[in-house]
Length: 160
Image (cartoon, rainbow, N blue to C red; front, side, top):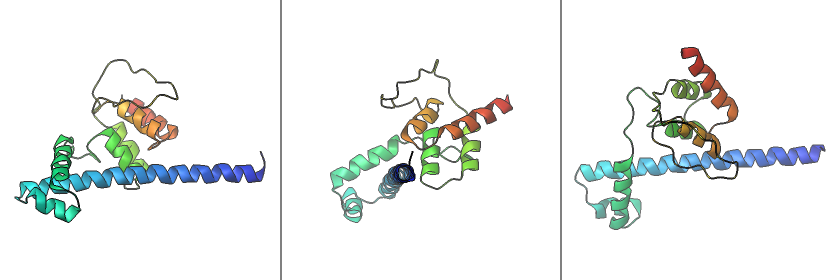
C-alpha cells in the first residue's frame, strides 16, 4: 500500500473515532439532561418551567422525565450504571483504560444463557441489563476495541 493510501486509512480511522466519541458524549449529555429534568420536577418545578429552560415543550419534558425514570440506578462503588454505560463513559473520554478494564472485569454480570455471536452486518441487539452481552454491544458500537475485551476477559480469568 502506498503512503498516500495509508494516510487515507489513518484519516478515516481518526474520523470514525471522533464520531464514536461524539455519539457517546451526546448520549451521556442527553441522559444527564433527562436526570436534571427529573430532579427539577421532583423538586416541584412545572414541566412548562423545565421546558422553558431546555427550549422544549412541556410535552417533551414529560417524555424526557419518563426516559430518566427508566434509567437503571447508579451502582454504588461502580463507574457507571451498566457495562454499556461504563463503555460509553470511556469512549467519551471520562474514564481511562485501566479504570474501564477494572470496572468491566469486576462487574457482577447476570447470566443469560448461551451467547450467540451475530454476523458482522447484523445490528447489535439490546442486551439484557447487566450481562456480558453489553460489553459485546460496546465492541459493536466502537466504544471499546477487541484488545480491551481481551484484557477484560484475561482479568476475569485471573479472578477465578
